Length: 399
Image (cartoon, rainbow, N blue to C red; front, side, top):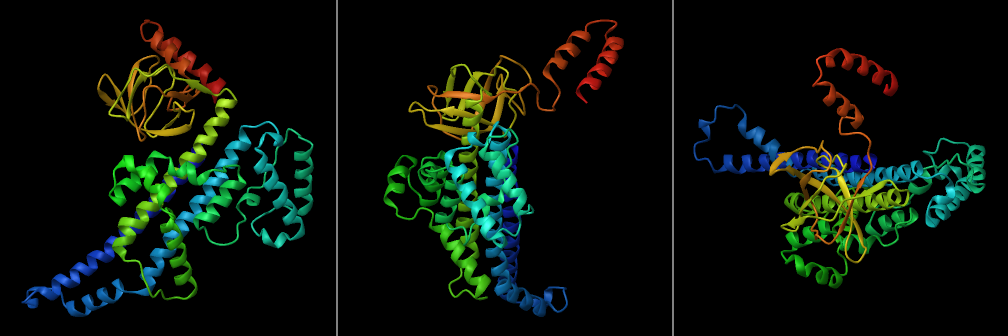
């Protein structure tokens, strides 16, 4: 699942760069305006200031600038979708024993795409395997051989740009069939709608049911990208302020939700395989987002995710935004069976069921039992000698 989470971090870093670029252009605009307002321009010691500001002004209105911004935002999003799906398939691949354990839609799509590849290999330019190798993999998968082999390109070979309809198709190909409804019931997306549309959170669900195109910004971004990429000039530009305040926040929100949806499916697979542990019942929930609970052996750290089920058995994941022990903020939980507070990015209730991923190691990768031995040896006068010998043995075993 780390691969899926990493893709959101990459997207966020790239959008940060685009935002800085737009802000730089806005600074240039303000500089031009402020200079033109000055009554005594000779007070500015910089030579050729008029020429410099003229160049700045031309740059702020440049078609190249606008094209670079729009194309870059779309490219970030498209890369995020492809890498997220690839990471999701890879996680599924690593947690099954045979091809038949993939969901029916994934198997169906894989066979369909493999057939299209064999009839027209040129459509799959990034696929490095020969036709013979693909046929061998198909045979192994059909016969349920333990060596599961998957070509990720068969799930990513989409034609056309990623408007929301196309995004739904890609997710349907990996077995996620209710994407639109999953997005609409997600807390992060509903909070985004509440903030940006200026409506109360409790009214968001009714609003989303009423609005015909809640994902219109993505489709508009794709249209603008196509215009500047193929026609060079866009007659009706999106203002830079709209890109900063509306389009980029929308892409961030949508990407967060898509990540959570794939993570939720991944946690469901872990639960099916017995790799999730259930927390004890919540002690209490504070302000709808702070979960007070026994830590058990979760070894949580900031930005981890936990899995939960609501009273209707709907499943979600929530990111750990803060951790507290005895009202003190910490970055990770190293102890077992202590009361902790977990600040989550979702609204929750104390009646929900919460789960964490089983782990035998804490955050820095050291087996937990090793810390127990170290703690014991600290109270012994021969501890330093024994500890050195013990560390050598452990190194030989684990390294």
